[in-house]
Image (tube, rainbow, N blue to C red; front, side):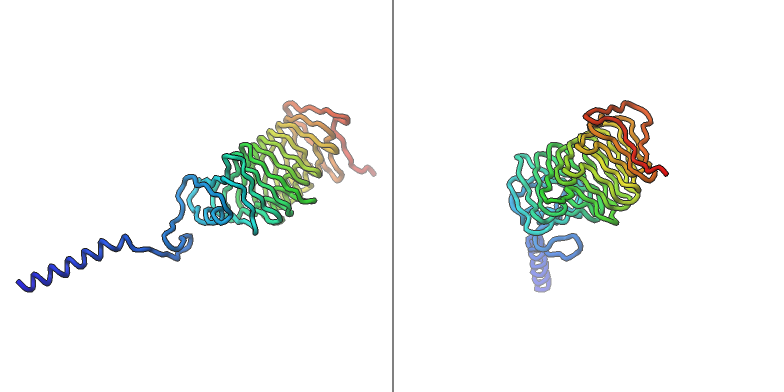
Length: 288
């Protein structure tokens, strides 16, 4: 009898310990896992109102298709790096002010800005696509106020992708690409640049444009196809240094020019219109 009594006491004690275990705090230090009671954020939407909340949410959003709704104006005191597949949005037109910092997209992340989000910056770039894919859509806006700002930028040696489906981009150069095998696809939106709305100056970079409003400069080692949209520039609507410039559509308001050294503008099909004070196609090859 005494043996049974002791055994029952032991079993009761073990049961009590097991019941208490789920109530105890758990920590983890594995890659991608936050410490304490926090867990990686699953797909869904969360609202943030401070820089600390924004950074913490970006860091923990390790699942795809996560949306961060910016509900109040936020100032960044240092660069924001995004290596996760997320969307930044705003329902109420809040502004994310980067100042001299930038928002860097790395690690092949897929990042979308949409809704009524406003983002401004005064540095050399506002969004820097180092590796990965950046998409702008909805009525979101990006404004670079620096004197030589490339508002959305792929730096030298990088292969980022840029998709413009809507929204507005402004800056000295709205989109600047100095990368290698980088690409930009424009199907909507408005891109404004005091120097160039879209400038390709990298190696083996490509642009495909079917809509939107912008002016274009393409480098000698790059490729572009324009099939639609309104291309407007005070000096040039399109200035091409590449022989791989193809027009199958679009409305060009301003000069369409091919620079020297074998540059060519190939009008292959479709409906291409030219207007403005100096309409038409201009060639600047040196003869002799």
